[in-house]
Length: 111
Image (cartoon, rainbow, N blue to C red; front, side, top):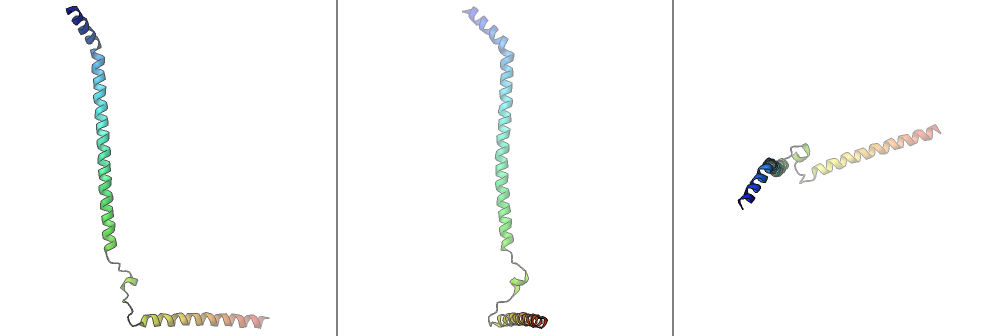
């Protein structure tokens, strides 16, 4: 029985370098996998936070008042502005009609 133990010990001693190298490789691989998983998780968290912050910023920007000229116009309760714009449109259509008439009269004169 003791001879079996001695033989077993000799075999383990002969394979010890290979086993140690194998264990080192496994440890390095596990460290690498752990680091990669941590990086992926942190990147996901960072992306989620970044998107949330960006959406909140856009929401805050959209909530601010718009100071363009069209938003500063007071609503026309009495209809004054609509009368003025209708009159302006009427003048434009009259001007277009007179232009058309002058062109037509010039064509008849040319014939």
